[in-house]
Image 1 (cartoon, rainbow, N blue to C red):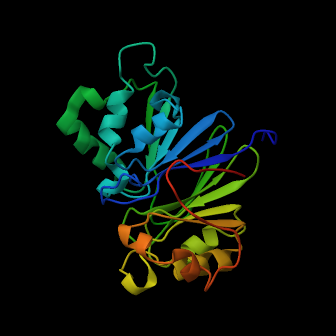
Image 2 (cartoon, rainbow, N blue to C red):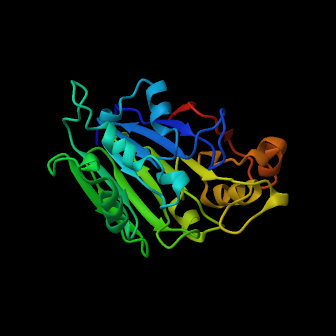
Length: 260
């Protein structure tokens, strides 16, 4: 691995399905080596990418945590944007990865949009990952490790180990998960959903103390709380998380960047 190339994390969307000027829906960009990796394509992702100065054609990989619209809402338009017929048209490969059932999910989109969301086979690969087991995928500049988490049948949490050996874990949507704790063990950064404050806990999502417990048990370097519903803006999310986590803590905001 090239140990001189830094890994950078940029929060593209820190929000949810609820429309917000402040927060786009879920998306995180990680750059490492020559790769530009995006996790989830919630509504607003391409706008945020543009604000960072990143063209959609620069993205090399997109990984989906699960298939809910606030995580996949720009799938069709993202591919369509890569077909724009001028000098910005995609010229290097794009890989889409997601859990069990993604090939059928994508083919259903193709049944609706047809050739408008089809790229040449030499430029487009679909990677379907078994969402029932831990899986490791070696790619050019990084390694992806996935585990199933407690949200949807296809839900995955991801650990990216970059070209510099640094590691980032993206929880996706999940309830409390021993798998996530194991995956995040010793990671430099855990980007963890914390959808609602403690008093509004709902099944399938985490609260700040639960996210803090996961980070503490995993021994991560830093914790980022994201996927924040509007109710989170009315609560002291940091104080709630501090009940269980004493390490470096960041409340996600759109367009913030973190260098590892």
